[in-house]
Image (cartoon, rainbow, N blue to C red):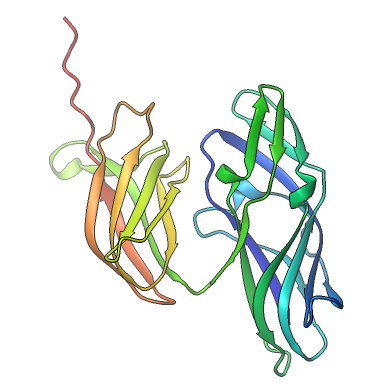
Length: 247
């Protein structure tokens, strides 16, 4: 049983991004293709962030060793920013994309591939009324280690102190001990941290966006990540900037 899931890296200035996949196929030799049954053809990719993924295709395939995955997007896109709904066209050069996979059918066991669609690097703004969707997609290991947590501030005093999740984006930068860097963003609501990483030890930095004048950056060192395991940072408290009163 072959399944393809999709997820997204959070985008900063896009509220909704409805995309449509026409078909998903796999091949043993890059010439003969097996069509995988579609589960979800049109969906809002921005709903599938922070560890949420969507099963878009699933099906039983003939026995064999499959080395290629092919995904075809349709030019049927709805993009909404937080202010407008610009006309968005699919880049025809990126409509069909092929990826390397390594899948040998054995007793019809479940096999999962995970496609990450990096929306921040997929959307090209031509002008205020016209955008282009050029899918920056990649296949990633669904069993990579995960670092997760919630960014929050403290409110109240004494025994009444409670954590309040922030409702603003922050950049997440993960730097490994051998200086490999990965970046993503927290979710817009709830300050959710979620990033997939290879096994290793990382420094995790959370940086407010340029228009966030309220929160300070924070650095967490020596974060250990294990393959196929989750490292939960729990609640990450971030300090507010003390603003001096204007006289």
